[in-house]
Image 1 (cartoon, rainbow, N blue to C red):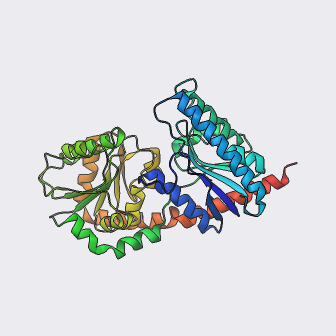
Image 2: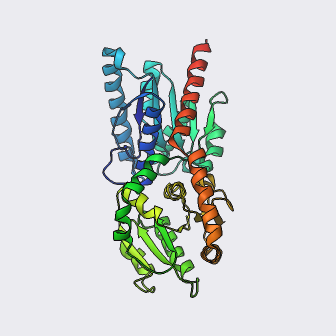
Image 3: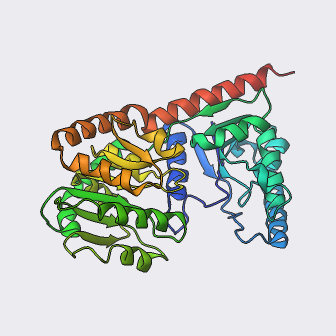
Length: 381
């Protein structure tokens, strides 16, 4: 089937790396793995983060214009026209002004993934985007939820006949692990050598929730007493100076910052880690926690809907109350003291990633959903 793909927040080929860009790429990979022909229909970035109503209106107008151009193009070339439209990640700051128009004009199914609906935004600075998201969800033939936190609000406004499918977070497990294995020589060069178990964390360095997580991590690690450990930090961003300042009290041998790294280098570093640590303060998803598990590394994280969807507490890692530095330190300390339990958790983590969070599983689930949507369309009067 020919599928038109659109990611209004950030297109899959955007130059700035992020978890959102990664998941957009993974959805494209999953669709292609299921045998579908995928075209990125538009690279319009609909994100408006300042609450500027005029700019939001302008973006909506641009989106509608692009929709009309796509409709005319595909009406001229019906053999290349999509048979389904798929939009990944729409919310009030980045609504979809293209997909609903195209889908209605071409009479094709409209499927959305990672739709977030926040009633508190009605009448606020993003009222236009909020309304557009509600329209899109109500028009959708199916809604796919990766983050469990979004499901309840979406469920409240969708058409009762519209399938709402919970899809576990996923990565290409085999490809990620293989890339790390092939790049193994990079790991020691990047991370260096030090005594004791190796902790790892991978996250962008942004003000707000990311910086709060880094600061809580530094606070927690300071409570580990005389235990031997060293931390490798992968990431970069506007708040790097503040992140480094949070760890400034540790000896240089304890914490090593390696900056932003390509996927194969991240995989290589994770393969050498004993424990992945991330407080996940207000974290939406955090696929690095899943990547660590794929490499056989147990995770200690704050309990959030996203982390809970990836980590089986007590079986593939440990979840603690988000924001609780003492509980986080206790969980890390207990695993530093128990290498056998770390290994058991790591083995279970790798199995969990292969069996429940691989791109092949996502491809099969999406393919089954599309078949269901098409069958429903055919049976409708």
